[in-house]
Image (cartoon, rainbow, N blue to C red):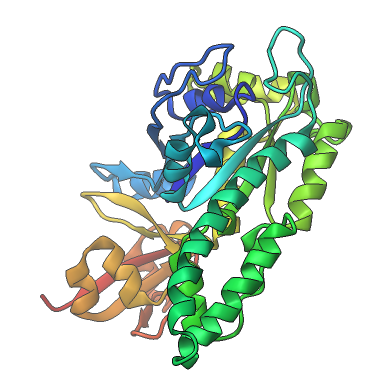
Length: 366
C-alpha cells in the first residue's frame, strides 16, 4: 500500500513524514523544501505477529508495511505548472490513497503560504488543483471517445459518463463522490482514468500539542476539516506532527509513557494505519512457523487462493486447501496441534473468504 502525503507548503507534511519513516527528509520553514518525492517504508504496528513469534520461537517476525511518499507542497496554479506542480501531481497519480495534511494550529513563527490559517480555503486550494488536472485528462479522453461514439454504443455510453463526470468536477465536487453507473465496462473505464480526485483520501488535521488530548474536539479548525471530510466520504485523523517527531526518537516503553502523559491512547502513525485500512477496505492474514511469522495485507473479501497468491504466484496456481485458525483461538490453545485436537482448525477450499487475523497454512501443488 502506498500513501501520498500532500498539502500546502508549511503545513507539517515533511515533519510528519520524517516522524513516520525516520527517513530524514529535509524540513524547513520555507516552501518547496521537498523537491523530489521522499519515500519511506513504515511497518504496520501489529502485536499479533509479535505474540505468534513468541509462541513459535520464530527466527524472524515480518510485519505488513505501508509506503509513504512525501510530495512537495502544492500551490495555486500547480495544475498549470506553478511551483513545479505538474511533476508533483504526477507523483500523486502513482499512490493508492492520499493523506492530505491540513494546518489546524496558529503559530506566528511558522509562515503560512496564504498568510493565515483557514482549513476550508487550504483544502479547496489543493482540491481545485487536483480537479483541474483531472479535467485535462477527461478532456483528452473525451476527444478520443467522441470520434467513434456515433457508431459504437459502448463509446456512446462512455461519452455520456465523461460529460457527467466533467460536470461533477466543474461544480467543485471530487470524483470519489461521483456515482459511476452500474455497468462493468463503465466502471472499468472510470478506474482506468486514474483520476486524482477519485483516490481515497484521509485528511490529517495537524494540531498543536494542547489539542491532542481531546482529539481536537474544541478546535474549530478541526471541526471544519471533519465537516468537509464527512461530506465527501473521506476519513479524518487528528495528529500533532511535532509530537510525532518527538515520539520517533523513543523506544516503545518511552513512547507509551509519553503518550500516557499527554493523555493520548494512540500515536499518529497508529491512527493513520487504522484509518488507511478502514478506508481502503484492507485486512491482514497471518502466517506462522519456526522460520518466520508474517502479516500479509489483502482486500476484504479476498478468497483463499488469491490470498495465497500474495505469498507467491505458485501458491495461487497450485492451491488445494488452506488450514485456517483464528489468531485468538491459536493463542488461547497454545499450539496448532492443540487447536486441531479440539476441531478448531478449518480445512477451507477455493471459495473461502479470508478474515482479518486468520492464521493460515496453505496446501498447494507445485
